[in-house]
Length: 94
Image (spheres, helix red, strand yellow):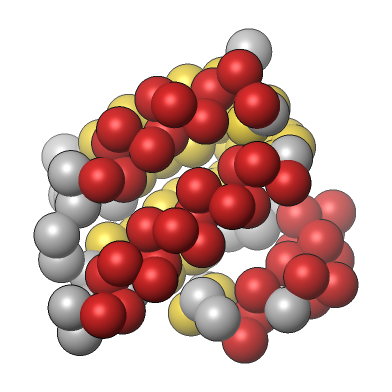
């Protein structure tokens, strides 16, 4: 199961397993973001390569406009994946 929602403070909360079947909904939410934004991964259990791709797509678009995504609360597993993919050099991770 996967869920993405906007918190009252402007953070985007992701929970569950982000795989190929959920990329479209994530792309829809992220494409509506036009300013720097925080993605909270505190309840995200898994992210597929397609999920990583949609994050990269949003980051590229936002960076070109002088903004970016900040990613917080990564699990050890997802943090390791980000390091292996070099995403720790592309995204601000807190």
